[in-house]
Image 1 (cartoon, rainbow, N blue to C red):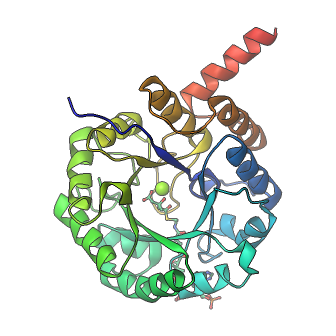
Image 2 (spheres, protein in one colour):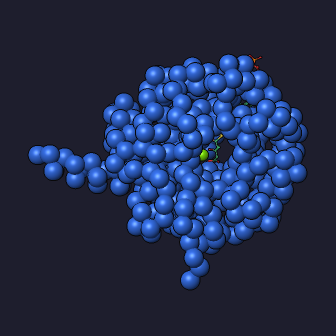
Length: 310
Ligand code: HMG
Ligand code: MG
């Protein structure tokens, strides 16, 4: 039996991946409060917004206000999605103490998804990312790269490990520091996840690779475990299981942060995150959105709290 990592870093992508997908408008003040609750719960990395076209993703149009409103906690890394130089320039037009600590360039393993999501081919996307990576790193900003549809594509269908590796290699060539393997539509299963991650590990160290698993087919938590088995120790997850991608119809939220922390606690893996604090954050954002968390752990723990207080 392979040994699992003793520590895991979780990146909560709820404020970005989660809230980009809501039909109702969510105020910047709510997004800021969510970030504050996540950092209070012990999250050390939070993806807070994206600098994309407001015509494409109106929910993220308040990106600058969100970054400006966060009262930063030392030791927490705040990241934002950036698709091009226009996005980077916008993110860096604020005073320096409001800059993101990390940006995320996001490519895709298939040509069709690349066109639908960012309106260009894979090769063109890499050429757009190249100056973004150089300019961000010149300012001391770390760059993460996401490879969307790495386990299946809503337009193409099956995606091969070769297609994944092709994009991983291009990201490495332009100097991207960290590579995230994303199951955008949640169709991945453990062996396929391990095969994709192993391709990423041919180009990046284990500390430089992360998993980003949507939960459409209820495979996300088992895919986290499968990734742990190949040594991966960084995962994106989303408070209350929020999330989706506006250009991947039918895809549901990311694996819920609470569910991952429950799993990791049971495995004796350190995260520095309080499950209780996460449940507070999940209850807060679900209350604003007017629905229950998707997370099974959050619901179970909220029911337990209610029964103890009655
Ligand atoms: P484009 O139309 O090809 O860009 O869009 P363009 O350069 O031709 O510009 C067209 C217009 O967009 C212009 O405005 C630009 O100023 C504006 P106009 O003259 O028409 O008024 N524009 C911008 N505005 C603000 N910020 C910018 C920016 N760039 C151009 N950065 C673009 C290309 C990438 C901008 C567009 O396709 C876009 O914004 N797409 C949104 C993609 C997105 O946010 N998808 C969801 C996030 S990715 C995701 O969820 C997946 C992930 O979670 C992993 C996974 O699960 O797979 C990360
Ligand atoms: Mg996503």
